[in-house]
Length: 226
Length: 90
Image 1 (cartoon, one colour):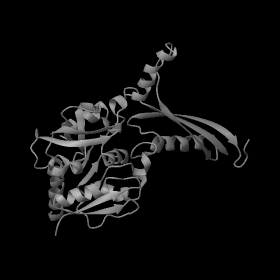
Image 2 (cartoon, one colour):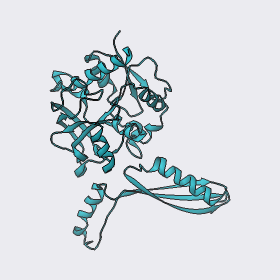
Image 3 (cartoon, one colour):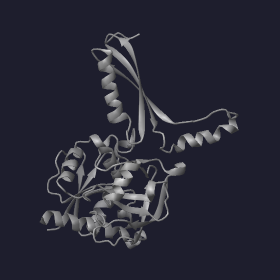
Image 4 (cartoon, helix red, strand yellow):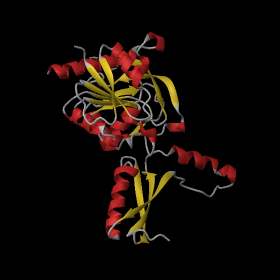
């Protein structure tokens, strides 16, 4: 049976179908989960896709954090299940406290919708397992609040625990230490601003995102087998 | 007792404030060369029903810290005014 990926949909999420389709190309079975669900049953991995959850009112992710499904996502993460937050999903993961730091408005106040080059900084996470550190990928970003910030102590912890997963080769948004994606210390919760699902088909100009999504699928299969 | 709370949320010192910087850059063109330290934040106003001022303050501060501000990047200031008994509105 194929690996099952749950893709959470908040009111205002808009990347869910792209993510489902990309995970299917990566060899998984993916289905949507409405944000009012209080339980996540039968999934091997959970993804919070991009968009504008709850209209991004207050701050991106600030209201989504209180959606009933987030309790289930937190329990899933605590049990070691792979959790991936893409763009707005990354913002939700920081607001709910599953990942440290925060995402603020881009340097220069520019909305960015552009391909970026990324360098794998750590292969320790569920997103980058099996991908060689130092490898470069081309994956687009699409955000206004994607500048990662955290205090000095958190940054030191992220580095010490090898939790900086992806860095921009050319920093587009002012993120501290060129950070494009991070994981928790265990490596099973990962957030990134770039959209791997938008680099999952030749037609989209790059298939580099599939490397990352396949790593998530492989990690999910591993957790299920364990 | 009803209280009116005003919560002022601003970015912490050290967190880049590109909106504030953009406004600051526009000011000299308007003749405001004397303005310094422009910061952009948000102000929330809400009413809160509590037995006494200390309780109202505690509840409002709790709300500010748990939702209105993200303590990783923002700081909040609370201003509380007594409005009178619940239902009694000036």
